Image (cartoon, each protein chain N blue to C red):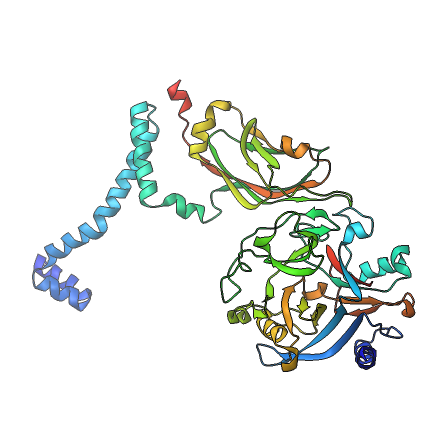
Length: 288
Length: 227
């Protein structure tokens, strides 16, 4: 059933972006680029939504320089060029995978800003930089720090959660990436203040954890403020939203993107979003 | 020959009407008094103060120098001259940016500068980051002292992983540490050094980024007089 509904959507997405289409979508992911919400200016914003089943797939956080066997400070790989490099590596060449832009960069484009834990190894420590100003309408443990949330694979349960930065303690996560702000706080509470709409709009990538244990990546096709995006993400699917239980803003603008490689598409990659700006981290999805 | 009253009437005819009316009513002495109090006296006092300060600056007698300095300090504080000057870059002598990477095998970096004893300076550490430098590296998550910064041989401050930290080398700092510096020689080294704790780490790199501002301000030395 999933295949049946996904294939036309995927086909439309590929044609719309003029990219090469994997010959057949697989059951562990689906892509929908027909979703829209209304921006602060009242214009529709189109969103590409990648849904990955956590039952059939796993998510990994990767350091881009380490994944391509380089040292931090020596690479300037965008999401697209990173995916190209991966597609030539033996470990990735014959596999299906999807790669999505990760968190923010620090003093070098390939050095992560804030916490990065990969397979239990701490590559970068948690950032406790205070927010420049309040972005949330209520004060909560999600508003204490500028990079307010950590996408964390809990060491105890192996489940992925978005936890507030202030709650992080060493050893909490086997894999983790810090970013922010947390646009949807647990139990679908909007984590952004309406006044945020006075700020500049950007193209956004947001990772959303749904009630059905799926991962959803929402990639906006037009610049948007976080507040209307957060409202749409937190709205139940039955009401036209994405039904996120929690959601974290990742790096955006021209670093935003999704690249899909399927076995049946050979070495060809399907690319969504700009994904042209160098990155420090990425999220990799693979079938179990 | 015109009389004084005729001259006066002629002058009044050139004045604005309200002022002319006031003088006609005999208020000239009062007007002159107000003008003197509001305009002439303040200007004259400042002029005389500046003149005397200039004269006193050339007299090398400790008591007079101290008196002059105290007076200047009151004026500086009263008019917030320092705060106003600090808001601009007018007092900045030079600015040096730095970006260094320190590793357990490369534990020290030196920045060459020229800072006279008692000269005002400020160091801003924009970021001190600690990141892994190879995939097998895992960083300790407890907060340890990473880098110490020294001016000459005098340690200024030790930093952990933090951002936007300012160290002011001001009058109080110099008064406390002046004895450790040679009065005649400029300080030429700002040293960034991994702490003993950080040197024991097996991997990772500490990245420091910031700037040194050296100001034109020279505080008055007290060491010579005390010795």
